[in-house]
Image (tube, rainbow, N blue to C red; front, side, top):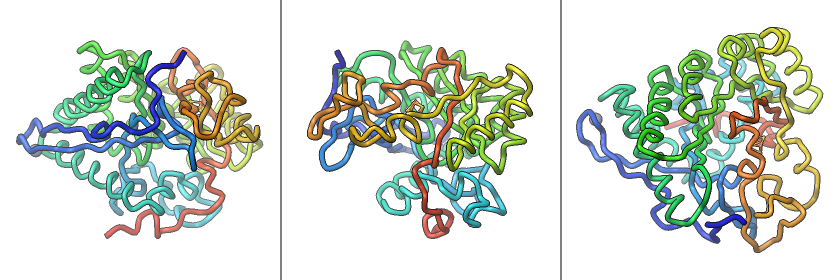
Length: 333
Ligand code: SF4
Ligand SMILES: [Zn+2]
């Protein structure tokens, strides 16, 4: 039986209060209630998360106020040629939800402040506070099992110091007794070596591969034996990119991929309801409008648990059949 399911987000649970270890400044980080990754959701007019366990930063290139240092520069707004960045689900979300966009921007401001003030060590302490905050709400609402946390539900890893801070936060939070698993997809290839060291602290790092970066990304994933997230326009492209990635990395260096059930896989076509939620029984057929549910990732766990030893394929990454234009990515005041 799944416990702790709620019909609404507990007041205050998505705001993390911390302070900058460098200068003492009070900080607020805002968590993202994302129905696909949440342990608790409800399906009423749409699927809504009722627990916040994800951390967003703005999408887009660094020089335009985003956090994606692995952005497909030079090709970014050229429709089909641009790879997954042109169809970024999270950038689309920022485009139609100013509240979400502002939240991601405020988080980036806080992250940059702490990095400037105290470096990776300071940011690791702030992130550890965030993980403990999530853990305390997890217990408070009666959820069971390890706390799951999705890093970068929007945006990406800024630089090596940011990656070090994430690994360090996992080490600190688990050292304080938090039963935690976290996961992150990244195109920031320069951070892969550091992120790979997080595995022993419950962090699963997955290298994003698409037609723009497949050569470099597969080489890096293979070097650090990381799983990949293959982003394709259809399952044929996912298959061919995966095959290319194995060829580049060498035999046995990258785990084999399975299609995400919620993004092009079996739950996307079964007509039981929104693909990104599942009934508490973990059966799609038991989904009921008006009833509580759990996020797809919480049921599937392919990306969440390192014991799965699999890579993942996403078809129509983010469902964005519409190209994201500078109005939603990059055009920042
Ligand atoms: S494969 Fe599973 S865990 Fe990964 S994103 Fe899809 S639903 Fe979530
Ligand atoms: Zn400071």
